[in-house]
Image 1 (cartoon, helix red, strand yellow):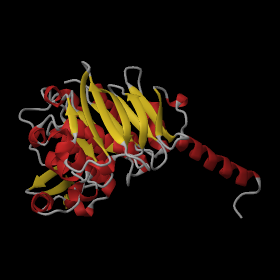
Image 2 (tube, one colour):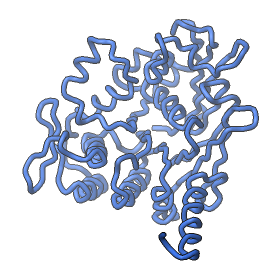
Image 3 (cartoon, helix red, strand yellow):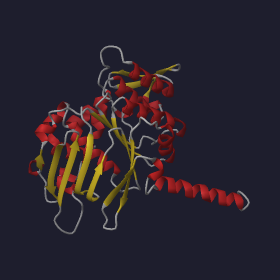
Length: 344
């Protein structure tokens, strides 16, 4: 399976003219709020999702609308807001120079009016993928899919999608050595393993079987990754999109999460994640090996109001790095107070 190599955006949400190359390994998106990190993940995920399962029949335009869920389903609301008419263009490239292109304007309301190019060829090669949103969903899984299929509940489609992937049964046959090592590492962090009973998930450990509603949200996220590895969603050639892995996670566990992410890319999984967390950034910096492919992509607002990206394959060359700058400022203020006589 081929990896996503490039994206070019024109007037999509906060983006004016934006272009970015991606690593075949881990891509870490950083930037202040409102710089389009999650929007990038959703756009790329929509392109991957239409190559497998029921989403093949939806096509890129419909999937794009569903993962963003704009008001009244009007795709034109994804165009960058300006005082004049705006044309929006999305071009995503994968290895082999295979391109998927979508074009519409701020006046486009119907999915059928989106101009899609390259979709037939794009869908010939599956891109197995998963999108883990900031909000953990396994505790809310019972009844969610049935409700979503019959009611307009106005959830972005990434939420039912990840529940469907979590419900996939375990792969047949024994897990290979690498998958077993990853599963064992996660079980150690979880202090147990995940089991499903119907639509309900439990963590089985020395205390018994604990329903997910009784577990910390950070633990539930680790459990979800365990499920995706166990059921084969995350295998070589697949793509993982993870929005703020550190959310509601004990900082002591962040290093273990980073190690799992690095191991996944060593197995051939391409990963896109967003973060606002200094510990996570530094854990990647400290744990990365020479064989690992990690790219830091810093997004910021340019003078025209659009978003631009600066990328680096080394932590120390990230520019700008709002996370490190904020941490440094906090450290300096702490030292300054100590030099002035300590806590009042």
